[in-house]
Image 1 (tube, helix red, strand yellow):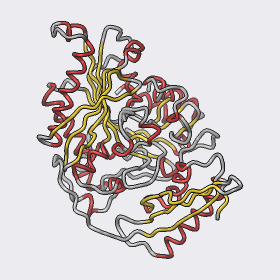
Image 2 (tube, rainbow, N blue to C red):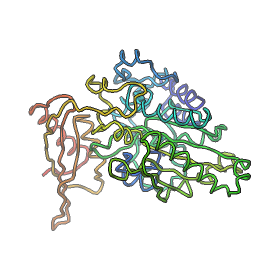
Image 3 (cartoon, rainbow, N blue to C red):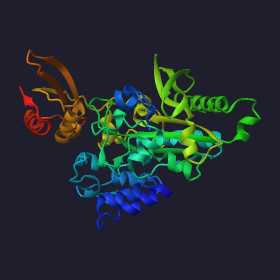
Image 4 (cartoon, rainbow, N blue to C red):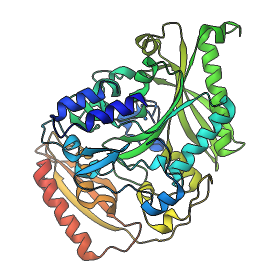
Length: 450
């Protein structure tokens, strides 16, 4: 695990170096990957318009029961691959840093590496498909460090320099040249340069986003890449692009059947800046068309930069949460982070598609907050403030009123839904949260409360 080991080795020296030095060294080796649509793969409209949507062993069942599926974290450090990353390595007093403590505490959780967690079950089911159909040809990486360079996260996968996904409104920046990866494709170019030709990359990814039942600032993605040489397509009688696209579609149709059974499918032509041609796969599932993933033939520029001037390749990206929500009937993305045994005990290693049985129906409590906005206001910033105060007790933040008065001032009214997945909230608790939200919104966002 070249990228992982170097990234973590450099990070562990942060106590004796400045963060910028350690991080920049770490990330020097280091998109659903930008392939996914917002409603299905947990990304914003702005990002989705661009995009593909991305100790090695999985913990034993005994360890999982002992740890309740979550690594213990403190306010000062987390463990990644056995190496301690200090809080000041990620959350820093830097004008370009926008990573809050709540996001720092998610580092190292690695839900996708827990065999009895729905995300781990789904990841392993996808692994089983590739192992069975490609004779263990695909290498698997699921423990890469999520702290990467801007170059790896954006430039190496041809994200335009002026694209909105690079903004501080959408991405968590450790410093001006270092981010928490927005997608697993952040590792694609280095793997290609290192000689890997068939691989799957799974990991936790981070985006500043809205608050509702399908959006969370941390989620999980998998991307796959397969590289072909001239010998592969020359004997087929097809040109390289057609051969690569056909192999891609055959592979992914088989994966869809493996996960969902004998379902009707259709391919939709689309656009991504890093593949051409580009496609989305949809299946007819539970009486509606569902987008499963995005994919395409990799742009020649990416391969050329990686030293593969004679090769063609395909790539796909998918969001694990969205597929797991469908396969396991999980209604709220916050549940994936629950340690409540009423949730965790419902799933078992290797059992794909066990239907989640709701164990509580605590009512939501709605509170409104209205204010006059300024030119710098964004909804993502508001959601970041609310999450920072209420954590997973906030279920949704929704704009319910928007008007501009005769003086040209614009007012927004947001309805905040508070609801715990595990217990009833008291009026005193909710009122305290809402009071703090109003206070911090006014202070941090420089708005005028109404």
